[in-house]
Image 1 (spheres, one colour):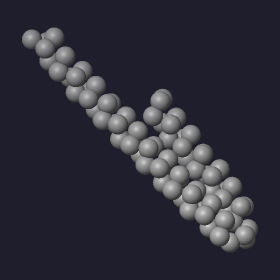
Image 2 (tube, one colour):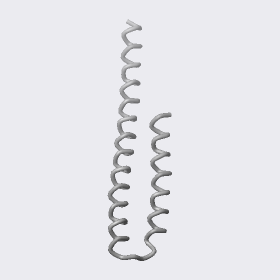
Image 3 (cartoon, helix red, strand yellow):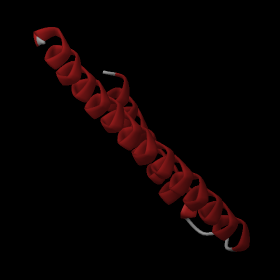
Image 4 (cartoon, one colour):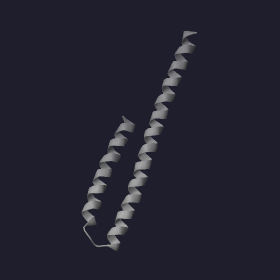
Length: 77
């Protein structure tokens, strides 16, 4: 009887960890997708106007790379 109860408790713990990893992975994919869309929009704006958008684009991409690396560290740790 104790083995059955122990198995159920471990099963619930496993499912909780799995759902947490799925949520983090979904967040990671969403941020990556939004970063890609924003980068394309900024590149199109830079192509239309030849202003100082290059500096904004570089700082934006560096910030998003830091975010993506941070979230991937959360997922895989």
